[in-house]
Length: 256
Length: 230
Image (cartoon, rainbow over all chains, first blue to last red; front, side, top):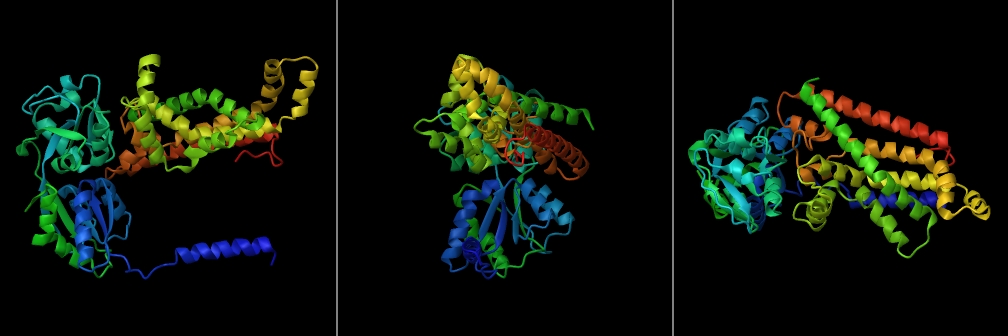
């Protein structure tokens, strides 16, 4: 064999050995979780590994994107959505394991400004958000699809403010991208979860939207029918346990 | 096709068109420097130009946000001295598309400049033409097919630009919602398959068309032994 060919085959073999398939369960269950759960789920995964289990693999995105991935056959074990609608959507397609769905967290949505901003607004009926925005934009996750955006839109509609701001939204791909825009001062106002604002030192909360201005923020968790990992059910139970819920409470979620 | 979808297509064409036209002279200048000039740091320039090709697009988008956002150093300069802002506007989408298309355009143009026989340029100089005149009457016309091929290739790349755009200027209808962003947004809503398919077909047709034109132009110019730019 010519030496060039030998070198090539040698390199190819080396690469393949590097990524040799590990036994399928050397890693923990694959969890698809709403973007707002990042810090809390990372804490929970750490606590789980401290109990001598394989580290769960966490994938965060807007719940709408995750639901789509599950629909398309993503081989995940657990799904934690930021609203009941997207979980319903997945359930309607028969993709959940029966009896595993439980709603266990709630959250609030808040109006934030960059940390250095001195803007102040009192949230109430017809509050002057459009005027405060002026020529700039309100950062939100997609109000048509992503839960954080949907709750925000519902709240603004309930307060009679939506028509005046609906053309001035900076539509971010998920709630954390909206948070980033406010952190960087590119958007003077943003609507995110209370827990997101808490996770960031670069933004300040100017108001909390009244709980009755939108449907209650509810995070359901469920095991997917496609789940194959033996640890998946145990991890789900852990998240729903008192200890698991305490981890979320420490990050600002309210537990049910 | 709804009116909204036509708006999206027109916005895509506008964003990509502006991106390519604005980048054309820049890409050509860089291509000429890399092809003809000798200077310290040439390798560094080559590497930097190729960065958008190898960095994850989301990283490029984030870098653009930091540098060209309203609070970024370059963004502030542009707002003050040129009167142009990028955040949440089609100009930002065009900038993202331009940056991502630049490496492809530079590569194509550089190939065609290198294919121009330097002896022709030397001959022009010996006959008394200034460097500038040589450039405009010898180099540029001979390199023109590659220039066009690079532009069309850059256009095809711009049409498909997504990651940097959505990270930098988000997904704003009428301003930054180009075809890829519109498809992404539509995918988030269940039951939207028809709209997604229509937009996807348009995207494929536009990109394919641009690529075919680019290949044809490249072959016409005959540069490289096989006459390819891809």
